[in-house]
Length: 88
Image 1 (cartoon, helix red, strand yellow):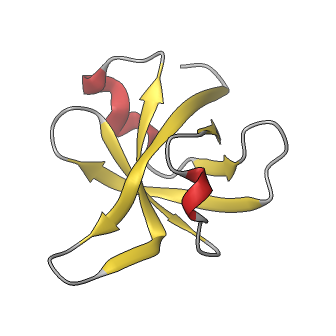
Image 2: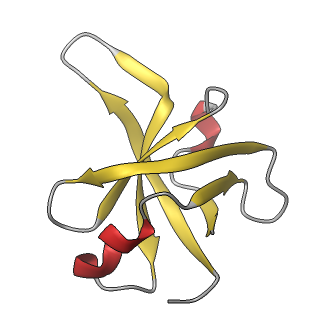
């Protein structure tokens, strides 16, 4: 497993009537979906070039390798679809 990876923010964690801007769903790039469970506990930084908002991988979301991440602050809407950096 490399020391750092990149991922893409897919969406906020949402419910029928709620939206949680502090929690996002992230798809890691460059690893198999079955290996995504080994990333639990890793740190996340947005944007990937110069992280200003940091978070932590909490758990998997589903069975296709998507991660649930909680950030310290709410992530702006412009971040959806952008890259994040995952590191230990």
